[in-house]
Image 1 (tube, rainbow, N blue to C red):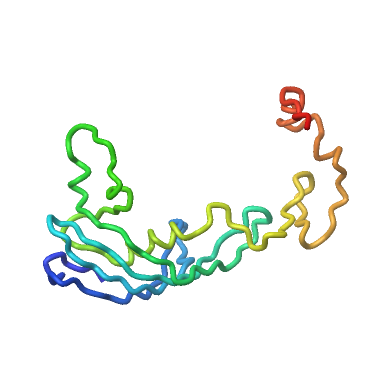
Image 2: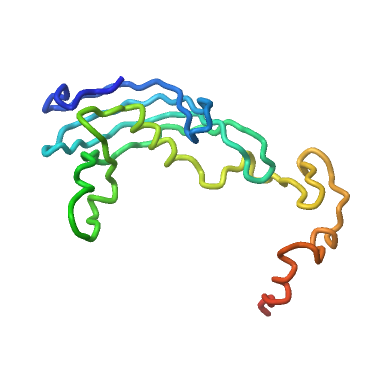
Length: 176
């Protein structure tokens, strides 16, 4: 549901977006989101985007590799949307404070679902964990330590065959 820039009235417009997205471009729509987006023209092809979004994304726990649902609730959107041609300005310049909260669009249309998708990605944790007490996988045998106790010993985990064993000789622990 792309919106033509010429169809946006001077007072702006508010639209509701309900969609599913492939957040990580893996070929499966793994996140559903609902957003209220207000688009207000600021002149010279610039638009101010504001609103809220709620989403549920399927993530993979970085410790045990199990998939889990992660909820984003009432995340606030507040940024400017500028035409991509502004990036083509010659020379270098220092980014101003206003340019830090800016997204870009191509052509003469704005795709609200793409704008919301990027905001969902920004709301996700960089290191997703399904539970703060997740024990993860055993680095030796690979068993999920949340489901059963591993019989591997600490010595096996620090075997000299480990590519990181050499770091013990280089990095000395600090004395307190």
